[in-house]
Structure formats: structure tokens, C-alpha cells
Image (cartoon, rainbow, N blue to C red; front, side):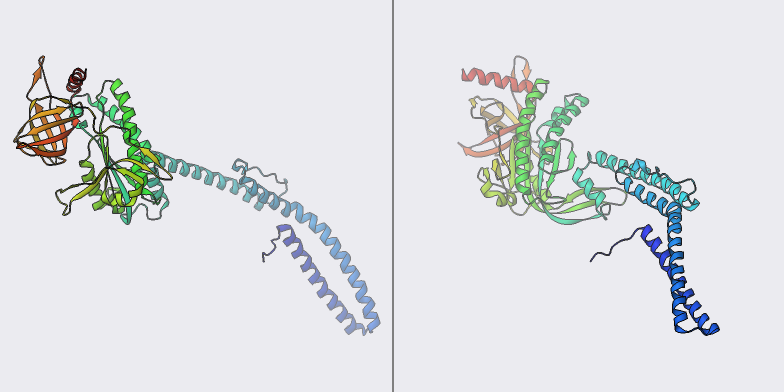
Length: 472
């Protein structure tokens, strides 16, 4: 049961009434005893004496309540009620905080309350506005370096600024541009930064669209996390849909890039799901919000085996989305530091109640033309180029891939640097980079299919010209 609340008017007038009534009752009892004791009055005399006193007391109380009520209302109750009404108006419009009309003869104490109240409210409002502006500035500024979700988590969590983290199951997406480093060596740095920013802006918007957080941007590589700080329950599906849309978006962006005089960009993406520690990592002097765990390392390994236009997902992710994705048969590869073979699948589509995305980019061209060009190639391991070349000769090729025979076998998913021993019309081919995507042994030679990851645009145009001539 809610107790009824009374205003200052009811409390004050009721308090005055009962106190006057108590005083008059004491005086009545005293007068009756005094008359009975000093004048030896009888019951009848005392009765009528009491009636006269009661009538007189009623008149006095009525007079006091009427006159005192007006006095208290004018001097105390009305100013206090005006103050209370003004406080309610603040909830609607705080600019009216100091607008209270008081009678000229109001008590100084009440006037002091009004004056100090207005000054205090002004100070509170100023401090609140400054704090809101600061919080907005922090969110807007650091939201560009971190994710808005992460910034909210740090600012609202009691221990958001402390070192440490929590264990979570997340899905990690790693993407990397193919051949961007070698392209940067031949271009103006400012131009490359502008091109990179165009690419990163498009990719970042897609990642945020699927509620992923961008943990790090390292050059042209992106590390995104789905499921932290909070899980959506469908993190693997969102990560895969995001990756496919990123590849489709890059195909559209490439039309603008080529029109601007740059070579087309190619991106590989790897996805893995697993346990990580999510939280603040570092020291009291320097920290970052990030993730740590074997699942991150595996995502990086998976991505390193991808070629341009490809989305690879690890076994742990595939197990969670088996009936929702269209994928190629699994591929197995032993990698340094991993005891068991790394298993991954190339995904081309995902369809769920929330997402339906299909890969539009063509990973493997359908048409190759037969051509024999001698070349030398060097294997690349952890960005170190082998000093010993491997001799080989192309069997067939197109602008995106090479089918070749080599003197020595080249392991699957090995990165190579390739140099043609061939010049045409005073033009010699520049170094190109590729990744082996299939291998077999034919007539004592190792036959390998390479996906080109980086090629000079002039060289690519020559191959296009050869293809056109071969197909006409």
C-alpha cells in the first residue's frame, strides 16, 4: 500500500492547528480545575463554564487558522510551492531553472535557496554538457581506432580500463591484399595511402554492417572479430557472409581502381572459430583491446593459404555451418608449429534465414591458352626468398594463373617469385608472385598450377593480348 504524500501546505497547517488545539485544551482543563478548587463551583456551573470556554476557544482557533493560514501561505507556503513547481519545469526545459517569481517580502532564506539553486543548477548543467561533449568526442575519436562497440564496452564497464580479459568463443576473420607491398615499391606513397584508404573504408563498412569489430589494421591486412564483446549467436554465419560480401565489393571497387590507373586489387580471406582471451592486453603504460589465442594463429595460417578472390574457412567454423554453405572439398596441409594438418574449405555461398550471399568473383578462370615460356622461380617461406632458383616452363596460362612444369616439385600452397626468361619488343617481364594451388607429376616432371597474386600491369596486358589472339 502506497502511503499518501502531503505537501508543505497540508503539513504546516495541520501542525499549527493541532498545536493550537492542544494549548487551548490544556488551558480549558486548567481553568475548570482552578474554578472548581478556588470557588467551590458545582457541576452545573462548571458545565456551563466549560461550554463558554469551548465556544471562546473555537472562535480563537477559527480566527487564528484564518489569519495564520493567509500569513503562512503568503510568506512561506506559496514561495516553497513556486520553488517545487520550478523544479518540475526543469525536467521539461532546464533553461527555466532560475525563473521563479517570488513576492518582494519573501523570507531571505527562501530567496537564498532560489539564488544558490539557480547557480548550482547552472554549474551542474555546464559540467554535464562538458562531460557529454567529452564522452561524445571520445566515442567519435576512438571509435575510429577501435570499434564503437568496444569503446562503449570500455566506457560503460566498471573495469573497462583495467588489464585482463575473459575467455570467449569467437569467429576471427583475416583478410590481406595480394601483391600490395610490391605495388607500393613502384608507386608514390601518397597515392598508395589514398588507394589503401579507399579499400579499407569499403571493407570496414561491410564488417560493421555484419556487427563485426575491427581489432587491427596492419597495413593492408584486416583482423576482424565476430562474437566480442558480445555474441550474437550466429557469429560464424555473419563472418562468412561478411567475407563473401567483401570479395564482391572488391570486384566493384576494382572497376573504379582500374579507371583511376591502378592495377586491380586481389584479396584473400581466412576465417576460423575458437576460444580466445578478449580484453585489455599490454601494460599500465600502453594497452590495447584485443584477442589472444590459438584460434587467431590458425585464422592467420588459413588466410596465408588463400588466393585472390577466395574465402577459406577452418574446420571448426565449417562444423558449425555445414548445412548453410556451399564449399569445395576440404584441403589439408601441414604447417610449421601445428602438430595436426590444417584443414580448410573454400566457400562460395552461404544461405540462412538472415543471410544469403554468393561469391561473384571468379577465382579460377575458365579459359587458358597453351604457351611455352621458360622461367625461374624461387620459393618463399615466411617472407624469405630462397636463394636457389627452380627451373620451369609454362604449359598454359591466362592473366590470372599459370599451369607449368618444374624440375623440382613445389609443395601445395607455396608462395613463389617467378621470372620469365623472355623478352618481347624490348620489353622484359618483371618479377611476378604466385601461389601453388594444385600439383601433380607428369612424365618425370612436376606439373603445378599457380594462381598469380601480383603482376605488373604491363605484363598482364601483354598476356591479355596473347589470349585474345589465341582465341580468335
